[in-house]
Image: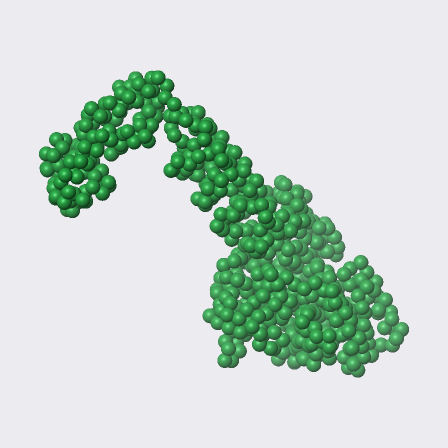
Length: 616
């Protein structure tokens, strides 16, 4: 069944509410004040099912200039506009403003109703029809059906409904695969149910028992029940007027302007870049102008920063801007919005959200316009590509999602996935080349070292990236070999020069001869006659080969000496002893005894128990 959301538009007292009632039998004026004053103040809702099986939801908006803010909250989610002009008055001020709003919001389809047609003669009706044709020429309403109607006599009502249904034929259905976003326009308490919110489901599907977050407040609620056109359903779909019974929140926790969407998936923003279309009749806009920002059902004050170097926007022109809102709201790239001036409060522009900014963002005008122009013309996959170009190491999928509203299925092929991390395969190849270059340089500077530690490479080359990214790089770099924590080029071999080989043998002999009472490491290094760095490198090689073992910061032992020590303890398995006995068994002083005992503890040969130790 096709769902169509039709919004009325037009000047006050041109018969919008009466017309909707004549079509549906539902009076959309529900407030006491509306009944008393005879005008619509807030949004009204009605629905009907056509003979063709389509479900039409009507959003009736107020026409008075004082309530345009309410009109904006309703018209932003519609598929088709029912543009109402009274035949006895023709075009009036709010006719023009409502028309501008519909055009700026990108509404693509509509039907024009000439109401109160029974109050004028045929010649006058024809003049009004011609005036409307001229008024909408060049707009989305050019060629739209113009239907004379009378809610009093019933004249033209069938033709109008047929025109609405025909206009909806071929209308693209909303995307059911996206994350659901419900722009809330009402919140109230229903006896026996609790908090109920209503709105138009912009995208996706919303199911009973799912959880939603109320953006920007951050409160999470459970969907207890859903109604569409007054009927309980298990799931609402994009393009439907929806009433949602929420558990876990009070009615005071919800206000018009909030958006219900999956919890933790998106983030509200205060700063974003956009392209706006300034109306020809608006005044010139200067940098840092104060405006009213309307998106979905949200209204908030904002500062407009002009990205163009001229810092001004001429009437009738498009421009790139940055909007800084006084409060956070949930918007995504591609969302439409309206701007109204502060004084007088009139519609001046509309625009499209292009790029979101989170946290503190410095504005760089240079190059910003070119970047945004490129960004605006891309689909989600293309925008993902730009973000990953700018972040060679990649980024969390969750960060991509909150910036773009993307899904896993939007991630293009050819990208590297490490858990929730997404990176460009081409960028990783470049980083892999740099990794090889760093290893080559390290081998050149430290030829006696077996390689470079993973941590040293990760902190220098992959700072901020997940550990798994190193493994992805290594898969693309077959010339790099991993040996424990060390990485080296396959071609790298440790080769000692003659003097270094002599020093190596001398060091090993010195520690072997010393037994358990070893000399200071620095003294042994100095005795080799090598430069300090080269001597340390030779010592490192002996340690890596296992010929020598470091027991403490300045205590190095030959492996054979430690082997004899372990043999002494193997013969005394199960005995308890103290430091005195250890010194007697080994003949070493306390200077060596304590570090050696701690070494034996680490090796699980002994276990300390108070002042004594147990030989395991």
